[in-house]
Amino acid sequence: METLPHDWLALGALVFVLGLKHGLDADHLVAIDGLTRYNNPLDRRLARWCGVLFSLGHGGVVVGVALAVGLAAERWIVPGWVEDVGVWISIAFLTALGLLNLAAVLRTPSDRVVAPVGIRGRLFVRLTQTSHPAAIALVGALFAISFDTLSQAALFALTANQFGGWEHAVVLGLLFMLGMTIADGANGLWIAALLRSADARALVASRVLGLAVAALSLSVAAFALAERYSEALAAWAEGRELAFSLGVLATVAGAFLLGLAAARRPPVPARVRAS
Image 1 (cartoon, rainbow, N blue to C red):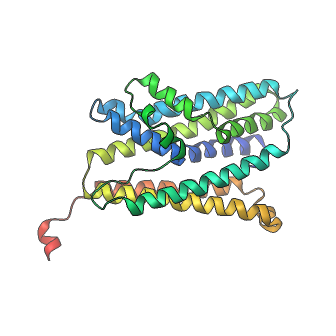
Image 2: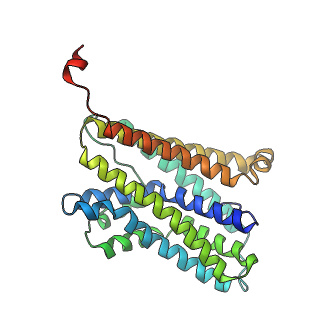
Image 3: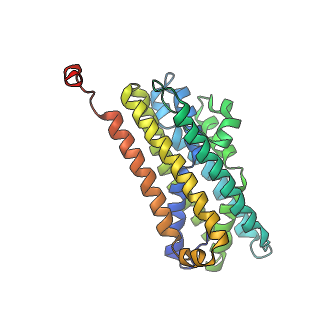
């Protein structure tokens, strides 16, 4: 769980960036990958919007939780153990996701596109086989029902309470939703672009993203674990949450851009390869 700043503008900026980062969660990548692949042969226009529809449903739950917690904040005190449980759950999930995505890159045959791997994505794979916009948004809402997502929304609301009340909690929920929609929308467009160029270029692009997700998941989990046992590291990291989130975001965005460049790069002519 994040330690949030107490300045309103800094808080809003951090929550927006956290939304961007959350949109690049491996489970989001898996769900949007499945929705886009299923709809691509049926309706390419809808396929390109699967990421946006998914995030709108997901974000709706976040805003709803933020509103509910904001209204109850005056009477509800979150137990101190909740943060510790949230940290350990995040470390466990990030480690599992990192190892699963690394294994996916290594095990996928060289002539096949690497599909991202997620925990909830593997459990609810059949839910991604739908073509109705409302059903796609519902899938996003179902994916929001997790300890990590709900605890983040509650934390936003409780922090916003010091600025006035539930209105501020809703604003933070909407900022988180906006960031997530941008990231998920870009992811849907990226996958649609890969499907339109299902050749050797797409094979390279999918591996770039798979390795980026694996490396980031493992490194963030390792850093969170180190913070638990090093007071010096925890003190150094205090107040740098926005910088860390931007670093994670920049790394994944770089992987997306590299993947897109690989997917769009014209193939090398046979003569050039032969020479």
